[in-house]
Length: 144
Image (cartoon, rainbow, N blue to C red; front, side):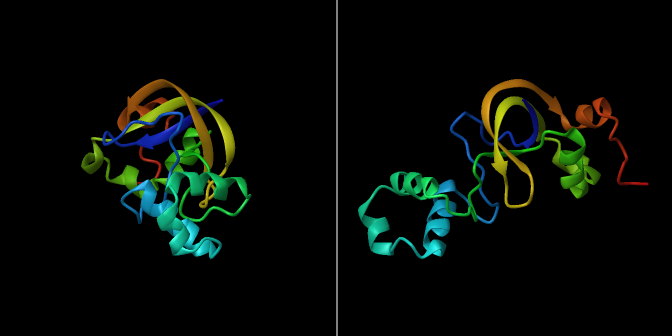
């Protein structure tokens, strides 16, 4: 299945990638907050075990995700991606370092804001945001 994602040059997406809320600087911070908010795991336990192991057990317990998504946030529809980031596309000149990552993936679930979440399998193409708008006839949709 093909997915579209607005992507930063700051990091690469891999098959192990999972998205997290932008209120956090790192995945580890978001994981810790998700676990602590569940009130299932005490701070003492977090100090005594490896965070990633606890997260794996937590994920497998079918708990609702909060700050950490079940996979890489993306969209199956180019228009849905464009609609979600509408204000971003209005200020495109200020955001020229980002690009659209088109990738093959496996749908996992929906994210906290209704977006698709997928497991990244392989990159298909990277295109500029301007090329994305042109290719899918999305240019100036929000300026009308």
